[in-house]
Image (cartoon, rainbow, N blue to C red):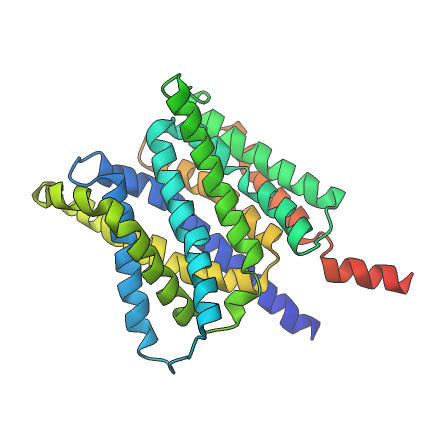
Length: 314
């Protein structure tokens, strides 16, 4: 029994690691596409959602169709808003107003939000071990960010930059709330059933805002490398990543799942080094060690079930 639980747990860890690794790789890929000027961030987001929606609907054709009552369809709409629309939308608009460095720093708040929300909603205990793990991971992520560009910039240096920071913070809160609130719901139906409806609802919500940008986009300006990058973003960083996120969400506590958000700056740093934009030094090695130490501490901290069992035995 314990062996099966451990196997399930490791599958969850591997799923979350791979998903966040692809998200970390998506950042430079998205930058490659956007700097070309052919498509805007909003159009790229719409392409991600549309592409994933189509792939999930195709995948669902090869499995038994499931009936979803209206009540659960409404819950799926809520999941789409929190996990995709608000998360992606707030982040993209926020990055457009503030600096990328500031946005990267704010993303380190997501595991903290997950811990607080899990404590209030799921009654997960806040332990010293869990807090220490999140702190170590945050310090490691900040070391990577500061070590790569010499520290954050102040964006536009005005109220728009502050608004951008707030939007990025809202994106982290939205994703953490999705992980916590829908922790058990994602196991109720098959993965493809859940994802096809989440992305369908997201497409319906986002398309009206992106319609004008889609119409004025100059698609002929896209290079082969940019087309490849878009393919990676749609297939790997969206379709496959969200499959892995659900698998990890099913097998891990929200706080543990949220800790893998710290993998993203590691991957971004590795890509920057590979592309000759940065170099590895002792600070970065220490940062990586801190992040994985933090993940280990949070992963081995007590869950609500373990905490209650311990109290009963006493």
